[in-house]
Image (tube, rainbow, N blue to C red):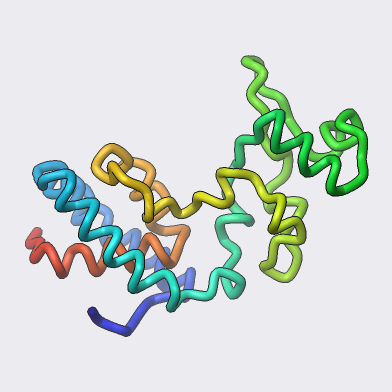
Length: 169
């Protein structure tokens, strides 16, 4: 694997814009692969790339993502912060018309110096992101490429995946 990982968000955004047409072709290419083979390739790249990227030097996910919150997650974090649920919800939660709960501010309230101040109590969506370790990558290509410009881990996995699959546009 190439060790020249790109982590500068301005550079990633510029490359992402330049690669837009290529990435559409790459998505179509990935949809033709065996799903288990694709999962194995992505998971291997994830194991190699993720440890080399310091998320606390970026924090872009916490600065740009809407995070869903469950009742249980809100209860746990409210308790940790020694707040009533009513107060917690008033400060941090927005409810959609269907009752869906979202964190009500971007960047996240709990981000300080690119670090999560409630890391042990963070929401599942935060724990899971960028989700390159999860199975069924083929079913999540829309989401992967939606975050390609946002996350150095996703960006570098995708770019390395182009190389290991010998993708030609």
